[in-house]
Length: 201
Image (cartoon, rainbow, N blue to C red; front, side):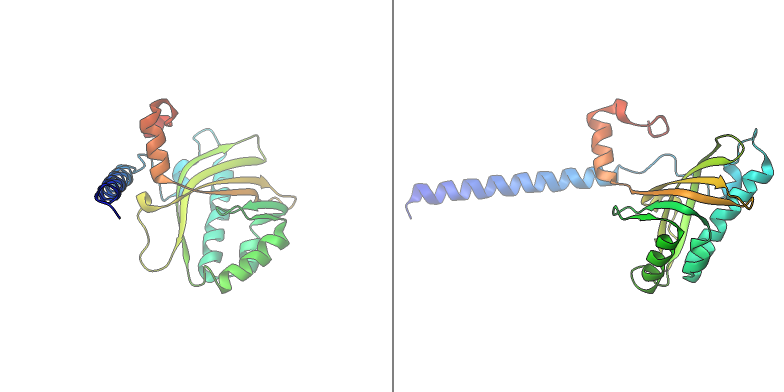
């Protein structure tokens, strides 16, 4: 190998290392500055709209409380009962369950394996009633074991669509769970500030 080839290889290696270090430093910067501003409240009751029927608001919150308790006990049957018969459930990895039975059986397997002995942590961002028999609840959440994560540490954004079921109980008709990609979100806000939600500006 001649001297020129060796010098070229050394130069390419140095440039690649510098770019890698720069990219690594950039990632660390984005990660360190990507905290959400609006973390929500731990009390569902605090997001019940002032103009809503308080009894319905509390019933919606009770459904979420029952869902959280069922998860904490690893009880797939109790978890599934919080959903309508024809509910849909989309996980952050993209799995899409259709119907209470599908949701129940999927969670029976999850409680026995991937999320065994975990609990749910949640904060609530907004509750809106769409007429007298439907509501949309948004929040942040995560499953955990050990110490409960702080509201700022919750990595998922969740949307629940609830309906008053035929027996009068409020149940979840659709659930969608999205994994927050904090570095990508921060990059997009820096690159195009107008894309940031009002609460994150």
